[in-house]
Structures are given as structure tokens and as C-alpha cells.
Length: 92
Image (cartoon, rainbow, N blue to C red):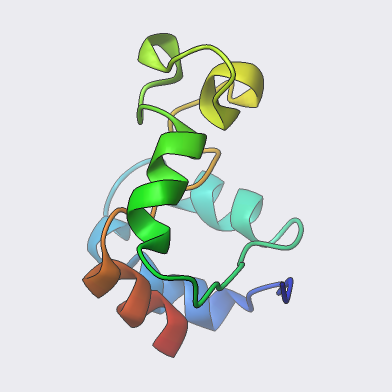
């Protein structure tokens, strides 16, 4: 595992579609506050990690999943949901 602290310019590109949203500054502030990335090359890692992470809405996540155990806000924990999305994010 390699933990990374993303520079604001990278996050601006990653969240380009959200730049006009009122919550955009909050996302950038949160995402620059500490390490934000992990990359794995395990087979089917997106699918298996989604099981461990849990439902996107922590209120609907199964007991024992990361989101059910520690997430307090929908945007504050893990969000890559596809191999294509992960490939794009890895390139950033």
C-alpha cells in the first residue's frame, strides 16, 4: 500500500464536474487534510473491496463494513466503484 496526500491541483481535476457545487470547497479541504489514496493490483479488487466497504449510504451498509462502522457522511469515505474509475484516478 502506498498512501498519498493529493495536491489541490490533482483534486481539482478529479472533482472537475463538482466545481460549481456549493460543497466543492468542503470536499477539497477535506481531501487535502490527509492521505487519500490506495492502489491494489489484486484480481477483482473493486468487486471484493465494495463488499468490505459497504453500501454507499452508511445508513444502509451491512454491519461490519467500513461504511457502517466508521462513515459519518456519504462523501467522507471510499468511492471508487469501477475498474474504469480506478484507472482514471490512478492516472491522476
